[in-house]
Image 1: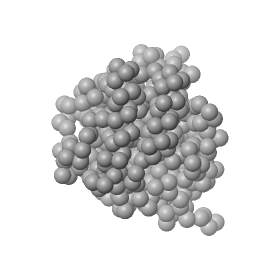
Image 2 (image 1 turned 120 degrees about the horizontal axis):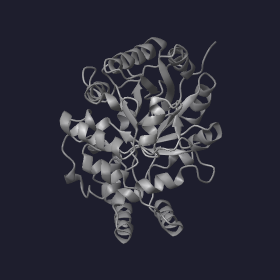
Image 3 (image 1 turned 60 degrees about the vertical axis):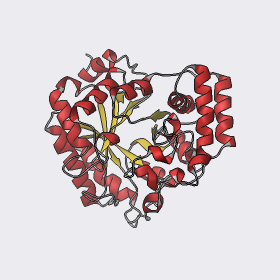
Length: 355
């Protein structure tokens, strides 16, 4: 007999032979919730719910949020609880992944067993108020001071107890993936991947995930909105916009990086679509090809209109792909992905385990 989730997936048109996380089939494009709670002026609940409903309507049933996206009192978990309280029929349709593992109400990674348990328990408790289980818990960053084995063992306790569907990693090195995989099945690895963030092809992360059969969750697949062509100058960024602190958006680097976007806009014009749709199509085209792992982009959007645009899939021909690949190779991005406050945690490693 088909489960409730099976029926929900069938209603969404998701083939069970497609990508699965913790046993749940998901769409080839997911939805990032960060912008719905983590910004100076978050959208209203009504607007957020509209965007979430639109994502699910178009098949994006993998939702990625975090206890770090906001405050301890108001983050992705609370928004999800409110959503599922209003729309209980969607509980079985959505696969939820929650990033955690930082100090409470802060961004410093704390992979200790105690904090890992705290993070998972609190996520489970908030969602349980709306009758929703925690499908996936994700270590948001690798704590350099705690062996990844310690973090994974604490998380595995909840899987073994039937309280958690699975565990994911984020911003981790290839070595971290291998070490974690010896403790627990790693359901997915979330890393930044886009036309201007291709490091995983060179640092072993993509190769390791392909070898171990681990899907890659591609965050910021639109380059934090830059690849859509809608951010034409730093003046388009509010004074409190996080991107102003990112080296790639600096006064010096912005115009250099804009050259790639201008070429994308030209290609999009010829294909009758948006530059962002080209960028997302390129990520999907790399998924599972050439010995690469499956890749699931999770564009974030705060309006139903933008979600719908991201979910409108564009097919890239062989010549289109070659053109985009040539642009990426010929116009390398200038500037780092994060400022000094977070750059040291990129593709993180942890201290060695001492048994």
